[in-house]
Image (cartoon, rainbow, N blue to C red; front, side, top):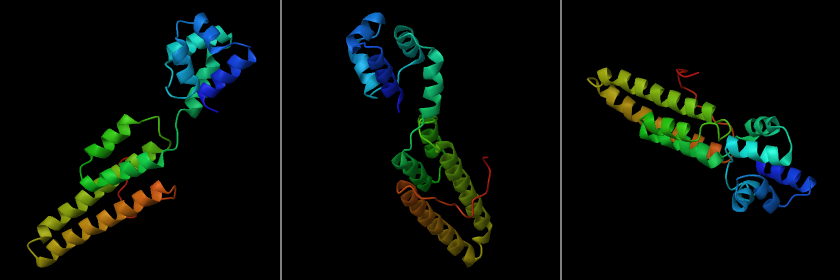
Length: 174
């Protein structure tokens, strides 16, 4: 049950219409409709007003909101993994910060992607001194290609809700 569904259920149990609830608060009827339909996430001030109008404890909303705020979004998680193809740590970090606290398991996925990116860069930097020898160039191409394949495969797994693994990743962020 979402916070909007909880508000709607309590409102109906109390025998109130959306219009009546709006009159008891400074919130418009349209905003109440949008909250109940989960089109918007209400701010704490809005929840305080609704709780007061419904004559319930505000803590019912806050504990409920924090428990149910994160949603599974495999498409967004797959995007975080795909951003690892850029070999810059900024895209996954920006995606991480943008939806932090909104997407379930985002912290774990983002940390794994950043750790993997840093690991690949370290592996590639180790190959640069070896470039004096022919094998260093081929090792760099192998590492880059291998990394590309791993990122694509993990992105597809995440998109399908499956477990993923960055086998040769160093644990830099915990």
